[in-house]
Length: 410
Image (cartoon, rainbow, N blue to C red; front, side, top):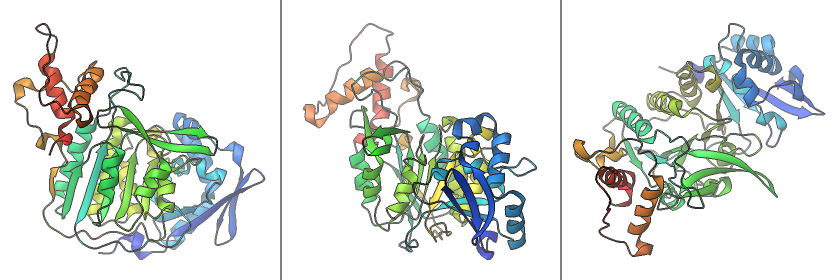
């Protein structure tokens, strides 16, 4: 059966800013004009989603827009905002209908990126690449134990279950959280979905704002990967979708998600604000489950937003950028998923009596030091002896190291 989003014509809403005024147009006809400085930023929208939702709906055209959506029978809305326009930095995804539902929870809401339509990707089974980074120490080697840890193992476990239950030919693997490993993984010619779970930020440079992802070096030390380098890695026809489950990867001033689509990806989803870590797995599993069931991206992202409804302040944070045609459903062949390399538990099975606490608090520096001693550049020690008085956690440290760095060894 054809999806509703495929059987009706989507509405394209052109949004542009001039002289401090944002104008929303459909087919050249102005639906609304709003002062740029009257619309809330991300933080304000999260503090009061209903008020922000009303303001954004009015700025998008209000009842005039809803009438067009109803008349056209469409459940897909494209926002076409020029690159660099101040309007692209606004969290339009927080717009709410008069009954309090999010516009993006009723209609698929995607942002268009100018350029040639997305090229059809290669047919065949799907490769799912997952990278989860949560450095043990900062760039200067100082402990990050005081910072909240990401729930990477829990997230990957739920994603693995979703892919397994899809009944599709998906080959999933988790890679080392390094730029080098990411570059190697993206060089394959197989159609690929890329899942990045890590911290992200926007920094000011002499050339303007720059989006960065916080990855790691081989030993768990923080190492940034900037947006242009990731975009260069992802060029080509094999990467079909990227989900950047990281903070500030869709900020309009330095949108990493937009940069990836500009570089050639059909679609990328980033976060326009600090996304709650405990909801990352809800977002990912709902999105991937719907996509593997054959839904187009707009419908799949709509379902993912509904999975976030327990926290209204998070519903509008995911922002999807697409090329024309980049949101089309993908037919992944039916079959068995091969996911043994996605879950770290498959690579390191420790006896129950020696499994470490998760997370192992206060030992980030020690884990980094152990990894450093085993690194080839330091002589690749084959045995490291951990000594100390009884009860200080030597076994837990060794077990945590085995789990944390299991990807280093085949």
